[in-house]
Amino acid sequence: MKLFTTLLISLLFTLSSFSQSQAEIRKHAQTYYDYMTNQNFDGVLDYMYPKVFEVASREQMKAGMEQMFSSKDMTIEFVSNNVTSVTDNKVYEGVTYAAVFYNSKMRMTFVSEKDKPEEDRKGFLDFMKATMDSQFGADNVTSDFKTMSLVVNMDSSMFAIKDPKYKDWKFIGNDDAMKQLVDTIVPEKIRTDLLKK
Image (cartoon, rainbow, N blue to C red):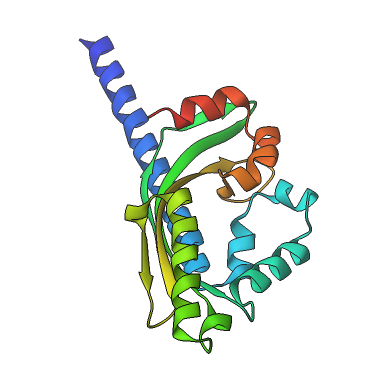
């Protein structure tokens, strides 16, 4: 009976630790996405896994984000970013990893097209919608001719990393643009295990 009680307490402690860890990751990930939604790029960069800055400096990353989100031709804004789920943790060589799945809605407004003739605007918006449809699926893209904008709904994932070298959880996107970097930072077995659905 004593052994059973010890095992039960141990199991409950493990489940409690896991639950607290998931809640902690979810909280930090949501803060990261709130920073992205509000275009607080310093906040976003504070949450990025620091090894990313070995490829491009923090200053370069910030300048790139500012340029991407406020071009004279097109503005990009996040309507929402919400964490949908967090996986179990996996530990490898003292570093803890988890995958964070999230939903984003992003609005692209084509500023440079607004003063063009109606037919040209319609042709441009139809072309951009078809392009986004092929990438994200027609059900995930809506167009608004009046504002010359598209809203893209997408489900994606990123990796949460708790490295003893750094404070708190840090994040790195799991997308095609970051693939090469992700492959050097997150071990293949960890990536495969975390992304299993």
